[in-house]
Each structure stands twice: as C-alpha cells, then as structure tokens.
Amino acid sequence: MSTPSKLYEGKAKIVYATKNLQEYLTYFKDDATAFNALKKGTIMGKGEINCTISSALLNYLGSKGIKTHFLAQKSEREMLVKAVQIIPLEVVVRNIAAGSLCKQTTLPEGQKLPFPLVEFYLKNDDLGDPLLTVDRLNIMNIATVEQINQLKDNALKINQYLIEFFGSCDITLVDFKLEFGLDFEGNLLLADEISPDTCRLWDNLEQDTEKRVLDKDRFRRDLGKVESAYQQVQKRVLTQIEKLKNT
Ligand code: UDP
Image (cartoon, rainbow, N blue to C red; front, side, top):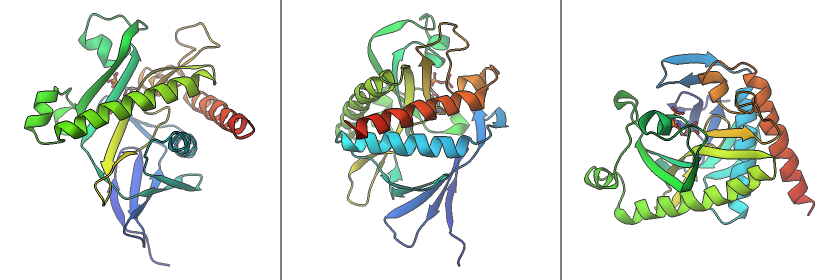
C-alpha cells in the first residue's frame, strides 16, 4: 500500500490527498494549542471526539441545506471531505461576549449581545490572526464583496441552526469560528471543523461559571477536566442526533 501524501499539517489536523483529486482525507490529532501556539499540549482522545462531533454537526447542517465539505467519517479520526481551497479567514460568530471580544472592548464576559456579531480575522499566525475590517478585506483581495456577503449570510444561518441544536443539548453556544473554502467549481463550502476546539460552549445544567465551560477554554485557562468536558459534548451531540433520527 502506498503512503498517502500529506498536503498540509496544521495545529490540530493533517490533510492528505486521495486517489480522487476532488477529495481529501483529514486526520484529527490530539495536539492542542492556544494563544497563537504559545501554549501547547495534548488532550487525550480529542482527535476522535472532534472528528465525531464535527462529522455529526456538518452532516446535520448539510441536512438543513448548508453546503459543506463533509462527505463521510471514515474512521474515528478520519473525515473524507470535498477538496477545497481554504479562504484565509477565520469567520467568528458571537452571541455572548467572551474571549478576545472582552479583551478588546469594555463588554464584560457573559453579556448577551443585542445581535449575533460576525467578525473576520486573517488566518496568519505570523501576524497573530488580526481582526479585519470589510474595507481591509476588499483591499487585500481575499474575497469579493459578493463572497463577503455570502460568508456573513452563511455564518448567520449556521449560527441559528447551531444555537437551536446545542440548545436541545442543554448547551449555550457562546461563540465559534468557521472556515470556508472554494471547490473546483468555485462553490463556497463550509470547511474545517465544528468542535469544542472551535466553539465556546457553556453547560446550561451548571451554574458555576468555571464548571459550566465545556470547550477549549478548559485547556486555555487550565481549568482541568478537559477530556471529560469534550466527552460530555460528544455524548450530548450524539444523543440529540439519534433523537432527531427517530422523529
Ligand atoms: N477560535 C478558533 N481558532 C482561532 C481563534 C478562535 O477556533 O484561531 C474560536 C474560539 O474557540 C472561540 C471563537 O473562535 O470559540 C472566538 O475566539 P476569540 O476571538 O475570543 O479568541 P480566543 O480568545 O479564544 O483566542
């Protein structure tokens, strides 16, 4: 058997080419980084959990009419996806103030925002993923005005579906990051992953502000019990998917 050829290795995933030019295989690692990779570690079993949660959520969003790169979960850590060229943007959607929004503004953590805030950050580690303005985006030719509007519309739709889905899991979707790509035909597809690495998720069944954290903030802020939080999200997501199948 020939060794699959690695196209790209990121902080949490490896992307391999497949025999089919239009499909890639993504492998989810246990490696975790935070603060632009200044903090590094391992979350045991994270790869399997994030691959499973992402597959379930991308498939769910697909069933709602969102165009995604997801094709199939091939193994516990492997996802088959449509080959896309990633747009070098992190599209962040926020429902509640947390993280960098609180560091850069006077908004206190936990404040509900009057409307979902969509932000674009440049995917560039050397520059520390800076927040962009729409004009900067235009001038850099990263996306056309039409594509930017499409990204925002998609992000807001996805937010509504995910708020509702996580709500039925007794989880509040605080904020999350999306990445999009263009396939061979130039279609805009939701790509990358949706997981506790890329979302802030608060447990509605827990009042304590530290205990309720079910996402990568447990790793970022050394809150402990990282693995069990990720497992909890997986359990609730899969239970809800099963429930939906039976209705
Ligand atoms: N996020 C991500 N990758 C990044 C930066 C942010 O997945 O490189 C996610 C993060 O987990 C959170 C949301 O995007 O759910 C907003 O992150 P924020 O801008 O607050 O940055 P942070 O303080 O988390 O670095």
